[in-house]
Length: 437
Ligand SMILES: Cc1cc2nc3c(=O)[nH]c(=O)nc-3n(C[C@H](O)[C@H](O)[C@H](O)COP(=O)(O)OP(=O)(O)OC[C@H]3O[C@@H](n4cnc5c(N)ncnc54)[C@H](O)[C@@H]3O)c2cc1C
Image 1 (cartoon, rainbow, N blue to C red):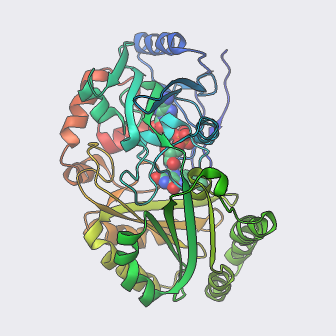
Image 2: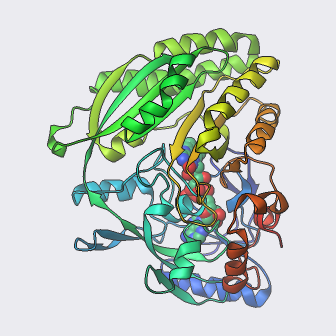
C-alpha cells in the first residue's frame, strides 16, 4: 500500500514528507523496497514510533512503517531467548513475555518504542548487568542496502551482530530481533526524596547496593527524588503494587497530568518556576511497592517534552552534575523539568553510549512549549568537557568529526556501513551529520 503523508515525531520537533509510505507485511516486501530505492538512487527509512527527538528516523524518499512486522515468532526456553518481529512495540513484548513467565533484564522509562527503534539509538535504563536494550540482543535479521537478508548471531555473521545492535538505522532494515531473556522476576521500588548533599554523598553506595538507581533533581531546589529498584526473591504472585488510587494520584495526576498543566502554565510566567519546583519536589513523597519488572521500570509519559542526554564516564558523573547545577544557578534560565540521573555498566557495542566504559547519564528536559535551545546550549559544553557522548535519539549538536574521537570503534562502524550500505540507501540528513556522507 502506498500513500503520501506527513510524518511527525513524538516531540513534534521533526517533520518529514516522504514520497512513498509503505507498510511491509514481511521481509520480502522490505527487500523489494530496498531494491527499488537502490535502483532509483533514492533512500529508504524504516521508522519506529518516532520517539527519538533527533531527526534520526526522518525519511527522505520511502518511509517504511513498522506495523506489519509485529509479534513474537520464536521462544527457546533452553537457550532462554525470544525472537520477535522488529516492529513490535516494547510494551507488547513485555506483556507477551509476562504471559510466558519471562522478562527482559532491564529497560528504559517507557515501552512505547519498537524493538528495532529502541535498540538502534542505544536506548537504556539504569544499573543491572546490561542497562541498554541492545546489550540484551543476541541475534538480528536485517535487510542490507544491497537487498541481502542477513541473519546475524553470536556464531553466524558475529561481526555484523557486534556492530548492528546499535546501528542508528544506517546498516539495514532490521526485521527480527532475538533477546536474551530471564524468568519473570519481581522488583521492589523504593522512592525517597533526598536533599542534594545527602543524595550525592550516598549515590555511589546506593548504586553499589541496589540493582537499579535513578535520581531526579528539581532545578532551582535542593531536592532530588531517588528511586531504587531491587530484585525480590519472591514469586510474581507475591507482588504488592501501588494501590490503584495512589497510583492514579502519584503517577497520573501528580507526576504527569497536573505536572504538565503546571509546567505549561509556568512557561508563561518563568519566575514562578523555582517556587513551583520546590512544591513539586515536596509533593513526591516516599513510597515502596513491588511488581513484575517491566511494570516497575516503565511509566507513562503524557506530558510532551524535549530532551538532551549525555553519557559521561561513571567516575566523572557527580562532578558533571555539580557543574551543571552551578551553571544553571549562575544563569537567568528557569527550568521546570527535573534532570534525570542514571548509570550503566560498560558494554561491547561500538556505537553504544556505554561502549567500553561504565557510564553516568545526565538527561535534561524542557516542556515542549519552552525554548530548549539556551538550556541545552548551556549544558552541552559541560558534558563535552567530560568526554560526554550524546544519546543518538536525543537533541544534540555534535557532528561526525567531534563524535569519532569519543568512540574508539567508530571506524569499525563506518567500515560496516560501507560494507552493508555502499550506496547509502539508508542515509538521511542526520546520518550524514553524525557519520559523514
Ligand atoms: C517519552 C520518552 C521517553 C524515553 N525514555 C528513554 C529512556 O528511558 N532511555 C533511553 O535511552 N531513551 C529513551 N527515549 C528515547 C527513545 O527510546 C529512542 O529515541 C528510541 O530510539 C525510540 O524508538 P522508536 O521506536 O520511537 O524509534 P524511532 O525514533 O522512530 O527511530 C529511531 C531509529 O531507529 C531506526 N529504526 C526503526 N525501526 C527500524 C528497523 N526496523 N530497522 C532499522 N532501523 C530502524 C530509525 O530509522 C531511526 O534511525 C525516550 C523517548 C521519549 C519520547
